Image (cartoon, rainbow, N blue to C red; front, side, top):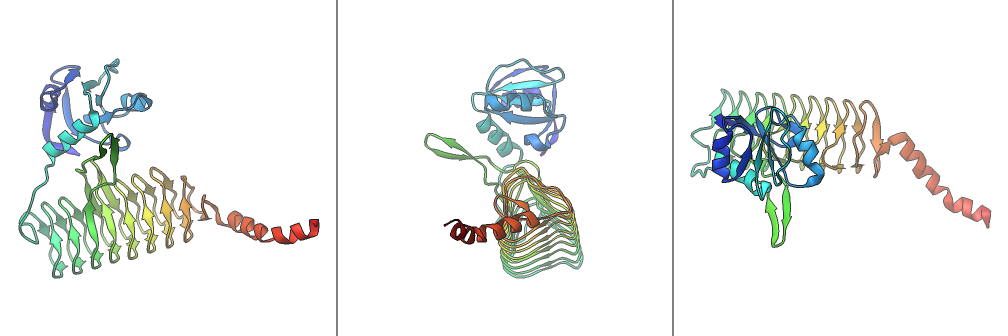
Length: 309
């Protein structure tokens, strides 16, 4: 997420009421999670296990809960609770904006687009040309939809990321300030849920088709011309490359990559990254031919035991 203008390190420290290490005029242009940071971004880290990863990332400002040596060319914001202060930044730079109308006056809707009754279109939403939005679709703020997109009834674009920190008194949510981006010629079935990024974009690539009841987690990037069947659950921060086929009731873990033109057979648990151009099945996931051989061999066990007797 980029800020509307570049701020100084001093300005951000004043906002958070925290100490800083570095030039007070050090430029701060945005904030992001570690997998999508760029120079000028703030990244937060609150566990020693991830200090080095954050300090050596592309981010040039690190919001951290301990005074450490500052890498050259970077700056530090010293906080007793980086998680809380990252939320403070999100609420400041992308605050929730209530609306009292079904289609926000700040939304931009392209020529030839049809929006059926009982839809909600939030603030700063952009919808391209010749789209068809069926009844009871909810499109949260800042969502971007391309041309020739069809969205079936009951789908929700832009709900919060499922991202929590455990506290002594319960769970503290990491506030989502990102977007959903739907590219041209995408088809989305009924009752799908696509969460926005925490600070970046959840993206559905051009020409991809989603069946009914598909869930896509925060910051996931789905490539072009993919097919994803019903009741598939895709976790956050997943990369699905172009022309992947995922059949029904597949579930994935977070932070993995599914290679281009891979085929994931129904009811598979994608527990790790997999190469493209191959077919996969089972939980834990394996190449389908190997997994089916294993299942065939398991069926032979009673016969083998009888022979041993």
